[in-house]
Length: 267
Image (cartoon, rainbow, N blue to C red; front, side, top):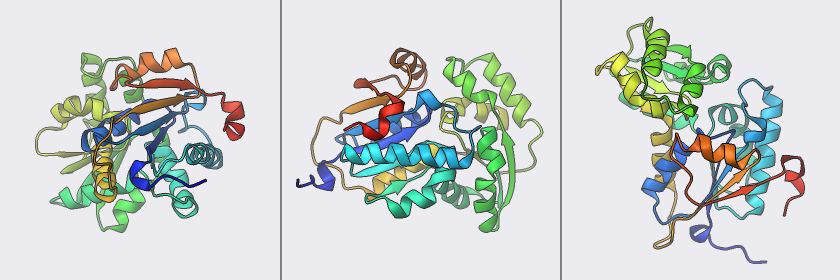
């Protein structure tokens, strides 16, 4: 069977849940004619508390499914999966694979004026040290802070609330003197205005969703015309997915439920 050209094939985007929808939103704003397949592994969320080997196995399984759907490229819209699985997948996958960590690191390197950079993320991402190692390898001084409750605030639709403001104050009030802050979780762009108010205008925020979309856009040859359709593949409850996704960017397109126990055998 002849495979369609890269230009006509969809881009696959996957995350353990709904946070990757912030990445999908930025991708669609830059590639409006492009079709996307968004894979949300809500049956096995969260990834951050699971062993690295297990997360790598999940990522390989999802990538295999997306390849069977004949995607032309894959975006790992999850910091935990990017940290655990991207090095292997980038070399073993026959289509381009992008993660969300390296674009954020490179953007911070370009933006910082003092060489002092902060990173906030989930407990799993921060404890992995992946951002810290990459930034320090560039000669930058790094402060990192886990903000585990931010994800719950976003998924409960409270991103602009006083609760979000209080949490941001709690997590960030003891920050040292930095001039750039990486939002190292795909949920966190939803909290960008609150975080900016707390840290002040002198600190530049780096959104992993925005910079990842910029990297993909620069490398991808989009179709000249098209509907820009999105299909959502969900391993958990589709109704719960639609409800939670409403607080991020909503769901445009079909939702296709998948049995995660049969994922390897699905055509």
